[in-house]
Image (cartoon, helix red, strand yellow):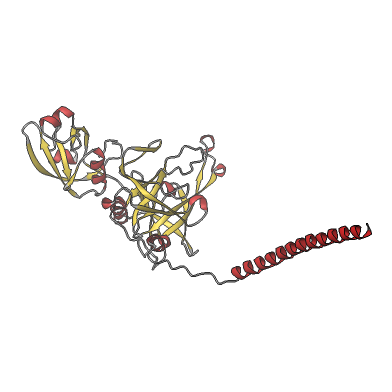
Length: 385
């Protein structure tokens, strides 16, 4: 009996030793695993970071070209309420922010007219932090473009691309100063071309605009829209937004670079007095789309030409012999598909320039070229062009 009791005890004791040893082994194994894992993690973190080769990342290269040409613009103006309009000391200081693009190493900068409109002081800050006070060379509210200049030399300037050759789906790069944050780059594609009659705000329409889904926000106005080559293809000017704060929803609009080229050249050539507003050239006609039955009778495509409804007396069109009912088919060899084409082409000139209109006279089915010498549009006339 005693022997059997001792044998049972020995058996239980042996089992206990085995179980305890197993648990101890598992605990030691876990400790060893943890220590090993810690050492391995530290070894990984101590490694020198790999040097990534940019290679042919064309977006990075494009940003390097265009970002240094984009500046921040801060403006200060004054405003007063109607009831306090005769009390100067009641005027309120108004501050604004926007962007601009250097178009000449000698300090010429293009921006939006609405960015600098009413400003008494314009301050331009380059991407390297240097800043200058700028003076206004001129502005064209109808195209929402303005030119300012800083007293500086050897500035990095943008290369203007050809906006007439853009295609929907191309990469687009927006650079500007959104919400006063400083230089910011966003990426998208060209969503549409030649957007017409966009009512951006009361009394301000946009014609022939480039549409992009690159994020554009307040403060981006006047900044650059670039292509994959780092060329300037547009000046960002407006967005459509559903929110009260005007945030980006992927519907941004830019003024095409070929329009920028023509208008800014006109502004710089016409410079005489700071803050000069450029007078628009005009033809002096009212027009509409060609009625469908007339287009069919003349075998004209439905998207070809505009019909002259009325020629104002003693205007460039009148003096050149344009008649009511004439159908304008092209202007300076560029086909006319709508009234916006006429407006944009005329706005690309200045008073005194000659432009050639190719027209069709329906009553005798005769096509002819007519040379028109443009004049300055009178300030009290709303007819365009």
